[in-house]
Amino acid sequence: MAKRIDVSDLDIYYGAFKAVEGVNMTVEPRSVTAFIGPSGCGKSTMLRTLNRMHEVVPGARVEGKVLLDDQDLYGPDVDPVAVRRVVGMVFQRPNPFPTMSIYDNVASGLKLNGVRNKATLDAAVERSLKGANLWKEVQDRLNRPGGSLSGGQQQRLCIARAIAVEPQVLLMDEPCSALDPISTLAIEDLVAQLKEKYTIVIVTHNMQQAARVSDNTAFFNLAGQGKPGKLIEMDSTQRIFSNPSEKATEAYITGRFG
Amino acid sequence: MAVTNERQQLLDRRPQGLDLGPTGRGGDRLFGGLAKGSGIAVIALVVFVGGFLLWLAVPALRANQASFLFSREWMPGIQPPRFGIVDLLWTTVLVSGFALLLAVPVAVGVALFLTHYAPRRVAGPVTYVVDLLAAVPSIIFGIWGIKELAPKLAPLSSFLSGNLGGFPLLRPGIADNGTVFVAGVVLAIMILPIVTAFTREVFAQAPREHKEAALALGATKWEMIRLTVLPYGRSGMVSAAMLGLGRALGETIAIMIILSKPSPDSPFNPSLFAGGETFASKIANNAAEFDSPTKTGAYIAAGLVLFVLTFVVNAIARLILQHSERKHA
Ligand SMILES: Nc1ncnc2c1ncn2[C@@H]1O[C@H](COP(=O)(O)OP(=O)(O)OP(=O)(O)O)[C@@H](O)[C@H]1O
Ligand SMILES: [Mg+2]
Image (cartoon, rainbow over the protein chains, first blue to last red):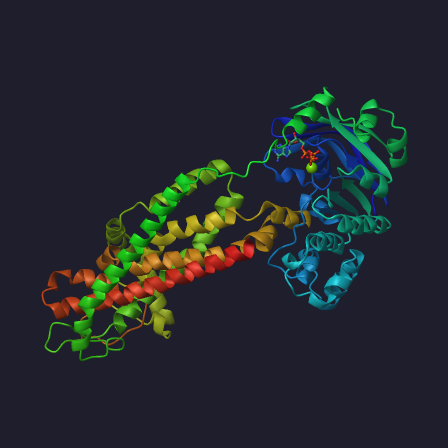
């Protein structure tokens, strides 16, 4: 199921503005990779190229290659819609569909894939909600609107919605930044469980979080305002946090940012 | 880079002292008072106009020998007067409802196209052209409707009434072109701009995060619209339709020019292919004969029913809008 991601010589643009430049990286299957770096260095931008959500912004485009196992995501006959069905995403702000019930939120991806069978849907909803550690809290109110949950519950609902379609990769853009410490821990535990099945890439501003949940860490930085962001180094999380090769990485993780 | 410097700047930006004194609210009070005053003035004006109309209508209603709500007669000039509004009510509701039925799907389609499909350099001009439709005077629509459009619609009308005449609404009607059908089509065009503008507005406000959620799940564009934009805009569409209906109910000149007046003793025909008169066109058609208080009162009473109808439609639109705002707050 889980797949390897290979990025080579990737340049990412918003119209004429080059936001990220020259990225080469490999993300191992069944691992958690954290993207860290100062605000504006292009972590979200980089993440969104991995499921072709980047091009949703008018004028946005990329140059270079992103391979999922051996398939180029930006190949000529690749449909971005198909890419997003195998590379799921969880956003910074919880965004369940507000008019839909909890059940329908989780089932929405499957329904998009044409699953209509009630029993199949029921099973998938239960499995996904259990997978997102939300089942116990919502099992007796599956028909309530998704917007009626707390922020932390909504975020876990979004995770359940993303894993319901059994993606091969799960992208998470600061999934805990709008959450309290308890909900954050709940999500971190969840990430640790999910990596047994999925390849996970997570953007975070929280160094401890990166250290806690990830196997590998990629540090991005930018040379200055209006300059493109770059991947400075990527290594095992343990090494990045104990003995990074680059000065800039060390400065950033020890809080001497610049 | 100067690390310490940046940090110092951030620290410097913290509030220094604590000042909880007055913040100069004289302007607030002045404008608050002005706003309140104009609000009260508008309400007073509405009450005054309503009261005036009632005062004129009540004597006529008292003298009326027919059932005002259920009679088809309209003889306010005889002694004692006999008048009822059921024909007017039917024609008004039928022509407006038909116009709405045509306008809303087109408006929703155009609004979706403008907000989610058209590239910006197409969307701008199209928006402008649709808005321009609203600037065409209704008398032009009336003349164009009866002279240009009606003959073109005649084959369709006779086809429909010829083949589906079994349905009461499609029963064959009058021989000439001044039908509810033609008037409804023209009305639909006339209310298209306002309905489109309003739906476009709600569709454009559908939150980006929900749209991205749908896309990230692997929704196609249309699926994304179905999943997020349409549910988000549903109540907006309903109130847009209500606003359009409110406008259609009161439209006068175009309807008056287009609709054929049936002769007073003709039997009731509910069909789209019949002629008829709406509240507004009836009053306008007979504006010249407001010579006795009873006659005037009868027309004003009819006008009041239109007023209530429009008011109810607008109130419903507002209620729906408020309800949805609370839901999305
Ligand atoms: N929709 C957009 N249109 C144009 N430029 C954008 C857009 N989104 C981001 N950018 C630019 O791309 C660069 C990288 O932004 P990005 O959001 O990827 O940074 P980030 O590392 O995720 O920052 P943060 O940590 O604050 O989330 C920034 O210079 C930003 O201004
Ligand atoms: Mg970001």
